[in-house]
Length: 362
Image (tube, rainbow, N blue to C red; front, side, top):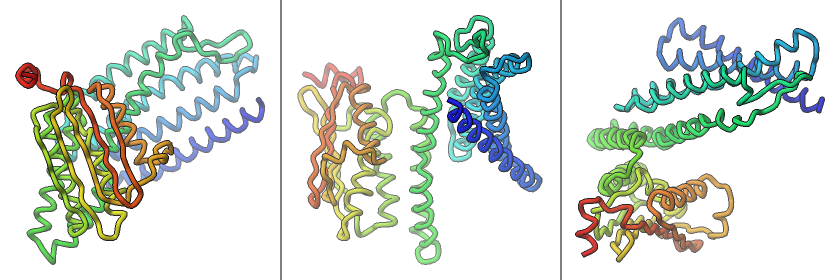
């Protein structure tokens, strides 16, 4: 137990020191570079420093029975909970400010997080009196309360915000910008087209962040077309795209297909020197909509789906969204050297617009 305490104290103090050093560096830079994102990031570092110091104090003084420790332990735990929520709010503001530079984005999510953080802090204050989140026993030890789980609800929003930033795909955009820059002198018209496509792609990406409901398939297809256009700027002679769309009169969760198309390009046809073809096929079945993303690229052993590779996590996320939002299922067929086919079967009851459901089943 003593060793665990020492390890935690060391890590907490090191993290606090690191945050403080970076914050001091930003304070120096701030004299010549005033920016809201810069200021918010500085606030995040300072808040994180105090949070880690509070947690270190909670670890260092717990179980000690002197009067000073009996004051420090409850206060330190209070600040750990409270500053954790404040850190969430600051990070949300930072992310919102960053995204707002790229495109128009609703402030509703930020307002909701502000209200939740305010409510969460008030509940932490209440917990000081009724122990709903945590309590300190007679021996000055910390214990979780019956409603500790409630304090973790905002962690789910934190994951969602990380996913929002991941949608922007900074590495992909950086590579695309590099490709566009190479055309600026050699082929200005092509560079201009690339910038236009990238702006449209980024706008669709950011708009997808605020779409909690399903969107028309045609809108999702447009987003895929923009993505593939950017990839063809870099790999013009390696990527062929084929669309075989029987119907587009249905709804689909936003960005459901993008991970599948990305995998087909990055982990399929670009793994072959000769390149290959990406096929997007849609069929209307009796009770389902079938969507298939195929490639004739490198393929893989489907047993590898049990690994934790990033691309496989993306596939599993698609499968989960398909199941939960569309009462659907996913099938994967792949052979090394031959290619991959990922097929989604979506319930028409969940995906057809209300005004066309009855007509489509006649």
